[in-house]
Image (cartoon, rainbow over all chains, first blue to last red; front, side, top):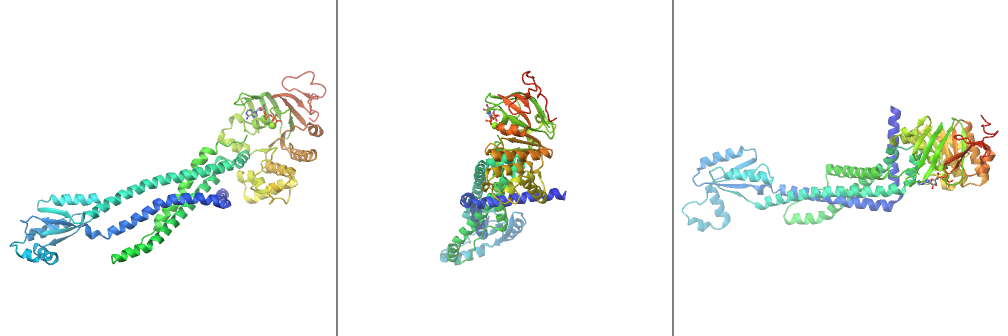
Length: 306
Length: 247
Ligand SMILES: Nc1ncnc2c1ncn2[C@@H]1O[C@H](COP(=O)(O)OP(=O)(O)OP(=O)(O)O)[C@@H](O)[C@H]1O
Ligand SMILES: [Mg+2]
């Protein structure tokens, strides 16, 4: 039992070190393959980092995504306050602020510069209003909320103050979807690149494979070094991809800081988090393994001693 | 140990390489396989190692009918057979040690046991102390001895050799054959295909002669003159030497 386990780990350790030394034996060729894989993987990884940053930025504009709900002229202040606390109990609402029509007029007067013109009016033309901060910021959740506020009967107008935030959100969702598609395509490309590399490796080593088959090497035994080679290619490619993303972020850091200063704010770019880095490395290694598996399943069988 | 029962082998291109081969090689027996080029010697050995399968008839090795060995079980089957090739088939990116160790690693021996057996095998072929050499730095004769060490390292019951002396001068050839004889002395069943009739005659073992895919003689003289046909005895050949004088 222990003997069998020892043998198992010994073989796997040998295969791993064999794959590494094989990569190092032809450094230029290996490097090219690794770079191709790295650039392919860096594309979706970089896009995800970009998305994470934009998402965080737009999150900080949360306040801009409030609804202003203008109530009917007939609604009294008392009723308006009631409505405010009713709406505040909704699950999809974060908080509600009541704005008295008198206060609103006062604020408008001081900010708009139309003070004298307003004095000419006999009545306050403004209704009471509620500022509703949504609890969920997904586009369709906000739409649902807007519709149900509109349907209340006592509301005159529901206005999303800044449509562009919603548009940005919708855009981000579209980009996210695109990144998913690009990721899938890149995964396929990596499998194909590694599969092809392994196919060439199998052809180069056909004598060795033939001899191993002659002395009784099983399919699994013969296949394993190639699986490890694919694994190493994928892992190395993912490592270099992570470095490429980090390098790109380093290049962007200064301009981003300059831009933030223009807005009198501080923004530090987020890199690949620990979790995303692990996903990248694990994914790269798994793709390499898969590519090698497919190539060896297809091509090892064809090499038979004659 | 090796038994052929009315074996035919037709290659996919229609070429019939063996027609109606029957013979038996007992455990611990040693025999040469001779005959002109194209007679089917290599084909016969390939059937033993399951590199090819017979079109008809039964090939029985180590008491197992090869017809019953599925593709998946071929590796296990081959681990009990040692094969020596004319061109050695050594791996040139590995040391002598690693070449000889290959079948042992595949069979799952622990490193210590592997090392012990590799050194023993190299010792037997007179290459002790050359473990770390690259095969390419060895002479042809030495390379062939590495090939033999690899074939016997896992102590198989049967060793087959296809023209193991094909590339060697007469002196080296004799040396290699003597080496193989020594393995036979410790009980290994040996079947050796060779062109070298002089050598065969000199060594005087059982000789199966193939001509155009059929056994033309099976006995103890290289040219078949003192041999008999096992299936359909030819009266001109079954004389006083018709029986094996070593039995
Ligand atoms: N893979 C193959 N496909 C088709 N025909 C083959 C194949 N291998 C061998 N043959 C044919 O079968 C016949 C026997 O070949 P084989 O190699 O067994 O002869 P041999 O006795 O070993 O000859 P040699 O002494 O030249 O090595 C030959 O006519 C050869 O052309
Ligand atoms: Mg031949």
